[in-house]
Image (tube, rainbow, N blue to C red; front, side, top):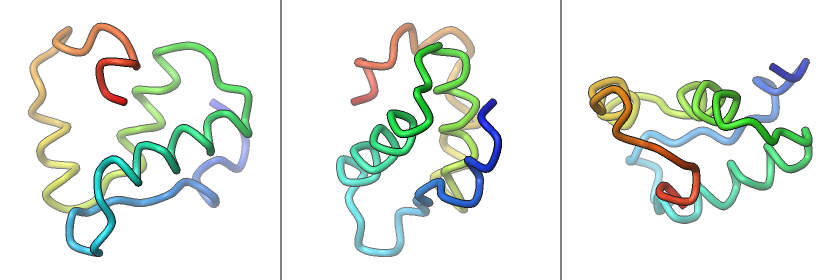
Length: 73
């Protein structure tokens, strides 16, 4: 994973008035800045961008149910 990404990663908890669409856009911008292209990096980095109930939701998404990044965004 890219060095230093955690310091600049946008965070989403579902409680700060930010929509999930806005968070996904900010997350995509962040990964673009780090030139992340591989899906496995996206999914691991995305997990770090979530807090609280949003993180609990993501952790409980069934394995292999997200097949490609565009499904999310």
